[in-house]
Image 1 (cartoon, helix red, strand yellow):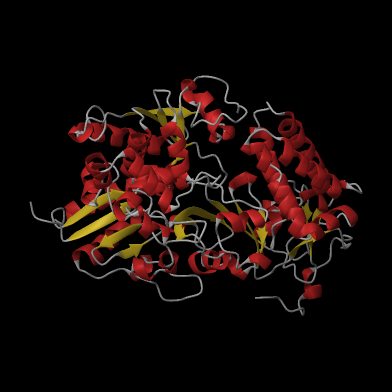
Image 2 (image 1 turned 180 degrees about the vertical axis):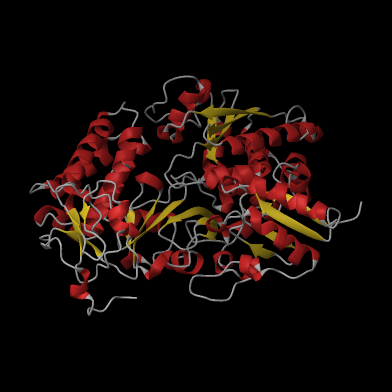
Length: 623
């Protein structure tokens, strides 16, 4: 069979699928058939490409020409111009906000330049539903190596020497955890892959499952051989249907190829995997809660020690590693511990995956070497803040992480630096905030999440989160009291010291870090009943500047509360007694007028009704 002249790598990760990627595939294949190009052009559905903000997207090989924000109606022209006539289509290429010319090649796009792909080595390159594609990229060579030439103890020592630390949040040395389990006498032993990814805005583990499931299977099988386990579980939240489907298919294919099951590669080693779906409880990301969930019990943590590596599922020694950790293992085995340990910092080796979201131009999934700075991630990879707004803070580590201010932009990203800054690595969520973000409101948002997700077993977590949330809610409502800040600090520290599991001990981080770096915002809410970011609804009002109002009727027409008065050529006025502060008027007012103003903690200017618009015609109108 002849090799296709062009390969079109079409992203079919969840983000692109939600944007219509499967429909694009249908239209693309129909157009190729129409022009007689089915033999010359091959359409390959890949997993997540990483540049999610440009999805649905595709890359035309071998030149690696990148096309983003694709729609079905764009495909006929793209096929005719590029795939038939060989003329790449500029208007469908990526154009950075600050530039006028598109960037055709994927390798030249700033989003990809500073990344280093180890775990995501196959993203956007292979069809995740074809095991042959993974094998063609040296897949399962690491498994073959350990089964034919390495003893379990050698594998564990190699992982220890590499400096690999758990990527699920705690950062515990992976090889040490394996060694503890290996040395336990009780059998059977188990290995669990933790894909209970519950952080708001996080999609790292899901994307690995969707783009390269065999890398996880290979890593988990190597781990099983190292610790002496013959059975493993993949725990994944049920909200990930595409990830589950692809992982189920990958397990089936691995069994058919003799890479899972009995007597793998005629080595005498047998290992079986099964998927267990979780119901979406955030606390199941904690090891002992996850174990209880698989066992059919209430997902609550238990006191440690003993640790799961000693007494885990069904009372047997159990290793729990997250998706990213396991997907890194084959790379270390193939390239060597010495090679891997040269990447990153002295105490944080290798790379880390982050989901880069929020007020950032280039949202997506990135993999960067440990030690890279926040400035490099936000401005070089992320492309800066939209609409030239100022960067204010970044929240790392999920809802239990902290908020790092702009003054620490040059902070290196590693386990120790983030902890010292009052945050944490977590599983890899990174939410960027601009100057319009209220940090008190941000702390309240994350406390609402963790308060809802607390299992309730631990009094300090259950009652403490409720008390923190109550105070934060009062403050954002303009009802704060003297001493509230000091109370938040004292209670937050008590919760950290006395809670049983990781959810409770890290729960106060958003509160404590925002007080540490943005105390002035808390004081403004308390003392002046003012939100500096003009984001807290109860401390905010909207009014129409009579010098700028063009009496265009747009805000009046769109106001859901019918609180705006005015006619054509009559300056509009907002009735503050009816206004629900929804912000619709602010959103729909044309930028060239900029007539709707937000105010917070200030007297609302009185504007008479019935003033003709002619009175302010001489005033300059911003363009």
